[in-house]
Amino acid sequence: MENIKNLFNNFGSAFFERLGYLLNPVLLKFKNEDKQLLIFYFHGIFESTKEKELNHIDPQKNMTVAQFVDFIDYFLYHNYKFIVPEDLNCYLKNNQPYAMITFDDGYFNNMLAIEILNKYKIPATFFISTKNIMENKAYWWDIIYKYRSKEGISKENIKNEQNWLKNFKYSVIDNYILKTFGIEAFTPWSDIDRPFNPEEIKQLSTSPYVSFGNHTHNHSILINYNKEEVKEELNLSNKVLLELTGTLPIAIAFPNGNFNQMVLEATEEEGFLYAFTTKFGKNAVPLSTNKLICLNRYMTNTTKINKFGSFCRLGYEPHSLYENLKIKTKFKIK
Ligand SMILES: [Zn+2]
Image (cartoon, rainbow, N blue to C red; front, side, top):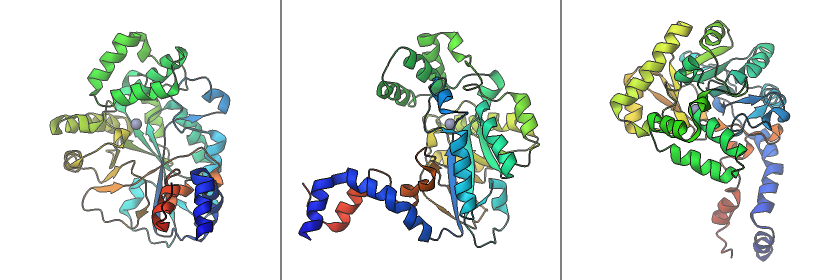
């Protein structure tokens, strides 16, 4: 006992995290994920790490194409079947694990991923903020990131400014950008930060490997709005998607992952079947489909793909493993 206590004291969280990174892939190998649906969300995708360094978009946890290929290889090798929300209507009868790839926002750079999807013949869902698409309008968090990076502001302060703005409606955010950086800030810099255009969405809607979902019209963080306004955001986006793709989306991804009871009610009343959150966790299949179903998603991770999401998939987050171990062992650790 004393030895284990010493181990905790001497090595601390860094040791257990490193241990986790080594052990998790092994543990996952024996953990049965059959009849489970793992959903992953991406934002942008980079051609290369060089492209990432140009600072045209907020890198978030964006992968390079090579990392995306590794991601797909990992799950195909482990016998996961890739599906889209439309497949959830059918009874998923195979006793196997399922995975879903989702991209939020509607970046044109997602074309890099679509080339890979076509090659592997696997589908993905793209949650689109339609106002950006219709007006070729840069995403506001990227504007903050680009301009503040140029000014030499620290990553931490950029994050703080972005997080502060998330408390407001899109009109307030737009105004802030206009006053701070000028009207030209809304114009994308390149194919790295621009949204898809309407013609591209139209063409992609004919692909068997592309499905579209709602991500509101203005990338509105819905908890900042009243019910009428929420419905308006969902409706406007649905209208554009119907016009461009000929289909009404059955799924929505809440911008920034934020929702509350009112948002769920409005979403259900607007006829959506699936609401994609950013709460991490697996989903059990098959799912019943008579009312709105909330689905958990894992954020993608650019660390070594063979350890993909391993902390999360085992029910931990990096940095929480040590705390959990402390509680489990009930040791008093200084
Ligand atoms: Zn988004």
